Image (cartoon, rainbow, N blue to C red):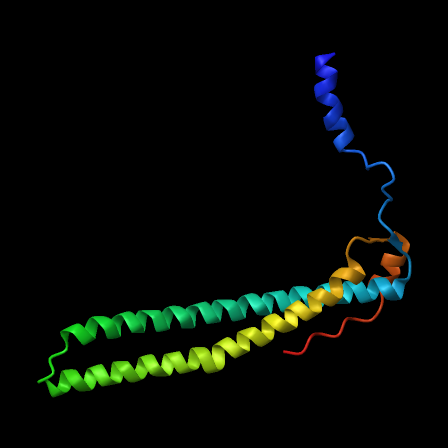
Length: 152
């Protein structure tokens, strides 16, 4: 009896809840093709967002390293050594250039790509997830024209 009581919850967990409907089935090949295209665009844009995030992370890490180098050099630079002062000024300029690039170019670019991905995903999810595709309609949808690619 105890064994049955322990197994029963496991069996019941695999069954749909009472009153729970099966997934709705999409039968329109054009709607299925639209979902397939949307999914492809989401995947492409997700890849682009990941690349942009990696570029941002690399630029931020470069700036952080330059800032550390500036801090380290500042404490050791000889104010009477013109060559050392010139090298320090070049380092400061390099750090400022990296900071400007990060915040004026890399960050806005990354934000734009991530925002476009979020918009595409927000459009895809309510239309195309939680839905089963009719196999025959899916086959027809897959034979339709190729999907337009998202703008770069």
